Every structure is written in structure tokens, then in C-alpha cells.
Image (cartoon, rainbow, N blue to C red; front, side):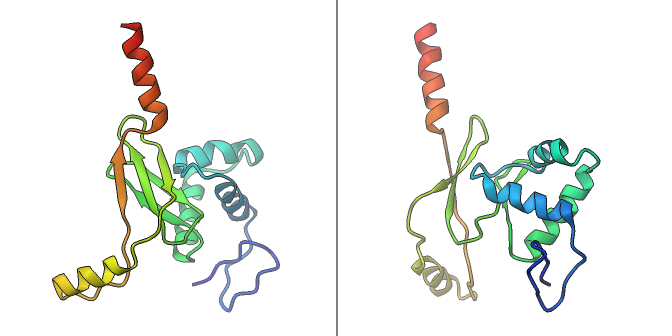
Length: 147
């Protein structure tokens, strides 16, 4: 299924144009912070006061199904979203929960290695790294100095 995000797109099978969906996608595309649905909802309410959280979730689901957005599940109850759908890795801070892109090459041979090891057909992979981000490390240093 392909979804129209811009009025000028002309996919084979389309949904009705939605200003809310377009603004959601534009907002998500404008940030590199991997926001949550709640954050997106709060930001969108500034320009679309009548938007509901349910509408944000429904449109995120449609954008994910269309391959325009990826959902990042980091092991907490809160998912994060990324308009960068290229294969790339993420770092999750255990202190603040922020999700960052990692600027490193994707290990393409990892899929083949996993397939060779398991015998399963491996078509894709995702990889999350966990630790403490630089901002949280700095805060921890400052807190130690104050003690």
C-alpha cells in the first residue's frame, strides 16, 4: 500500500489526501531526534489544535506501512519514530531514553553470517546499542563535583 503524503505524488493505490498526515510526516522529517508519538502529538497541536493522539498513531501506522517511517522499539513501553528509513544503527541512552543515529557503516555481511549460522532465511537486520549518552555523562560528572 502506498500513501499520498504530498498532493503531487501519484501512487498506484492511494488514500485520500490528509493535511494531518502530511504535517506529521513533515515534522518527523524535520527532526533527527527520533521522537515519540506523544512528542509529535504535542508539536502538531500547535498548528492543528483539533488533532487527537489516536490520529497521530493511525497516521504513523499508515506511514510505517508505506515505508516512509520506521518505528524504533527500544525495550521500553514507548516507541520512537524515524523518517530516515535507510538501514542504519541507533544508540539508546539508558539514562534519558534519547535515541541517536550512529554514523557507522551497516554490516551487510551480518545478514549472511546469521543465515549461514542459523539456516534461516535472513532478509534484514536492525541493531541497537545501549549505554550513556554524552549529555548524561556530563551531567553525571557535574553531579559528582557538587557532592
